Length: 420
Image (tube, rainbow, N blue to C red):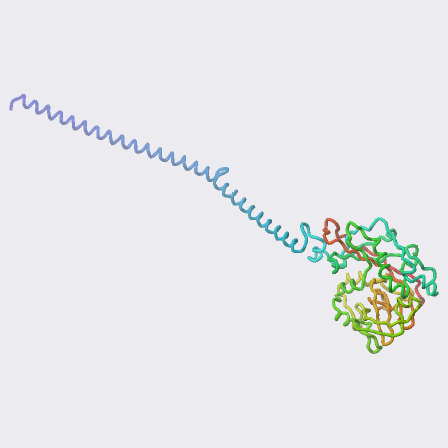
């Protein structure tokens, strides 16, 4: 082979070798470059992830983060639930007030029904600044009593607010008006009679006019701001307080009925010819037919005999029946009139009278007594105290009148103790 040709072959092989080496170098360079790019990408990815993690942690755990936002949402939800429950409770109370005929704040009547006020509690009912009434001697019968020589010196009898600082206690709900009923802690004293504060009435006139006079006296304690009515305590008030509700209840406890002595039961008729009614007696003592239905009765309180009325509530019992002795060994207590008329009947006459609460010989009675007798016109004189009742306006609330502490009431002891 010619030299030239060999030289060309060597040169061609050298070029191919060089080309292969170039190719290998380029491939190695590209591989190194690719590995470098992959590492950088990994580092960048890690950095991005760290940044995102930091942002996420901040969003979740930072101030105003997702957890705080969740907590705040939970708190607001609880507040909304509580508000809704409060609104429901208020609506329920409003509906209850509407059903009970009241609106807004609970009335004293409702407080009593709910047990927040009790029988015997004192309320700060304010007595009027002034007021007085003089009972007329012709209506009380005391004019005739003096004429008949039955009682000397007592004619017009005056009662005034001044000098009678009454305190007022809850007695119950008045059935007629629905208002809360208060009774004075003690009766009222007659003006100008320090040793004899009682109110005296006599016979037929007292039976006909006594209720009116008792109520007129009581009305001097009417405070127009709070009271819808003021009157004297009645037999019905006592009945309601001790649980006498029906005619059968009255018949069951009526001590004024005794068939052995010919007396007539409550609710039964009576009729007597050629006798006197209170009206006919005062009208020139004209005889007439005396007829009607027995509406007088009386019962004893916590007596051991039968029939009797049991009063287990000591507060109520003391409020109505304590210190009511009538001429007990010459001394009288705070016994009081009831502005209620009653007629009894035996086999041959009828007895007319007004009611009272008093104790004699240790037995406490509530009921009407005899002050005029139909067969012979015999009249009787009695002296008891006057005890007012206040009927509050039904819409009064605790903002108007409040419960106050118990008060130690003055005890009455008038007269001279008889020697043993």
